[in-house]
Image (tube, rainbow, N blue to C red; front, side, top):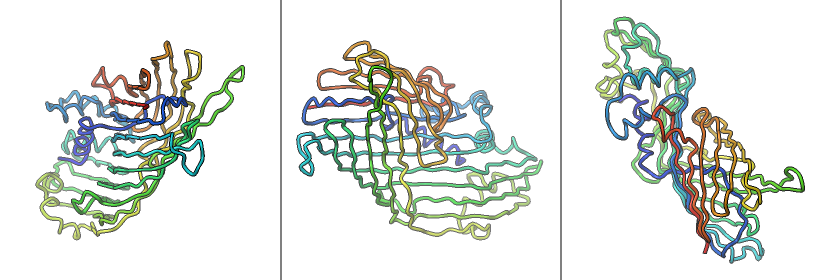
Length: 412
């Protein structure tokens, strides 16, 4: 199976696990109903610029990927394309009764979670090679230069302090890196003649992957920050709240050595077909000893890497506003070229004390434009939020992703 299809299978499996993402909008709630609070978050968020959801559904449910499905996705591809998914879940415990450092407004927070980041930048030719095969490109050059793949799975535990009045918080977290894979093809071009029995391959790049089956590949240290700042907004002295959030921002050291393949070479295969060189039973898959003769070096290295955390800033919804309609907007950034700047904006409608409903539009991240819908419900000391940042994914398989998010809060 080709690498692009392997990655599609990996992303498809994400729909079978609990994933983590931010529910939009984030609400500004300073009500301290009790001395303790537990917050759980989880959900699903996958998106792509070109690959339609009907292809991913076949990897999950089984069935035939038809020519129409492949053609619909292929025709949407451009020179640079993205796909990716965010995964995980978190639980937080807030204690407002204990006072840290004898400060009356400082309680503490304990948290734990699992996170997953996977993304890919690739060319139209790579998708075509994976789903149509090399016959489509007889006598042509297949160009998949610029392909960049990033994947990391990690767990965390953290401790920090939380302000009783604003619920702004900061925590220091320790991370376990359980899995990681990267691939970067700066140059990658494959030419085959019209008969298909002479190949020329030019490659420049690196591939890194784990070299052991140990659950713990490395350890990291990072921060979660959550600050809410009041600003003047509109007439009559009204205030709005800007929220600055940073999550899982830090570094990790991989004490388990990673296998690193480096290549900057051009080689030709005469009298051999594509399947004989690169296919499932190819000469490359028979033995890695041939790599040296092809100019591909391998070694084991320890790595210091950045965690795939994010920074988000924007106007949030104020639960204490006495009107029924509010706006929210913001910007989300990940330290990766695979995830482009994500901008969002929307409207929140508050028809009754116990319910909120809203819509939002967004652009960027792993894809292009998408629309979302959410609702939240509050009953005494409990609140439940349900949302989707890609509502079309529930109604048509021709959409380019799917998103389902949940947030539960309990005060006691």
